[in-house]
Length: 282
Ligand code: PAF
Image 1: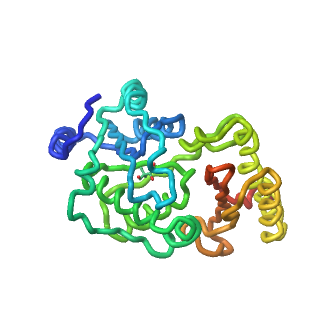
Image 2: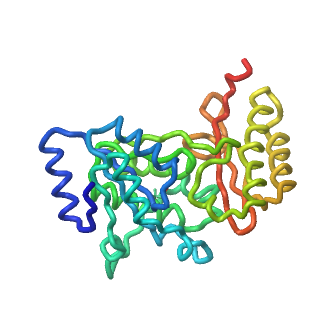
């Protein structure tokens, strides 16, 4: 695996593959890799001959009170995992390359980027959209893969790629979960054992709400029950909601819908989401 920190070296490697007619996949990450990331890498392997993984802890997507300084950084372990998984190139852009002096451009995705996490974490999706636009321009992959765990992020990226006519396919990869259902996340590492035990309430609350709504129950009642389950487990709830799967706005009969939640346990903010499978109870 090549580890590359300069743009011309990255572009040179990708140009060589393209000249040979090979398809290139990009998996953008912030490192601290776990099995969720590795599922993205495996899906990338199936989708393209050459896989590039980027690791960049993007300061622009962290709010002033968020965990940029303590965000886990595990470059050596990450690099070993990626090499073992057959990744061809690890893109490690330095912060001065991503945001040189004088950098003022901001990519803001209105609507889908303004609700839910967009409202609770002002500026977060601008940071994501700006860095993903840069990463896509730097690597110019045929396909880029993102986890469905960050469903709203995926929806924001799909919108931005469509709006800006970016010539890349975006593939969402299903959420990887622990045996008890907790979605894999780099932030799970912050949970002390007692919080980890309680954290399973998050996927369970979504599952309870999903089954109630899919059976024809009242959505608001089901969502209130899910919120109550989270509070009982010791969470502070930011939101538990049912939304249109693409726009994240109000759900519309006949269109795919998604149940999404964000809640804090101890100092750790967790998010999760599941589809509303109205076909389960035909
Ligand atoms: O999902 C992430 O790890 C990040 O938000 C991303 C897409 C790499 C942008 O920094």
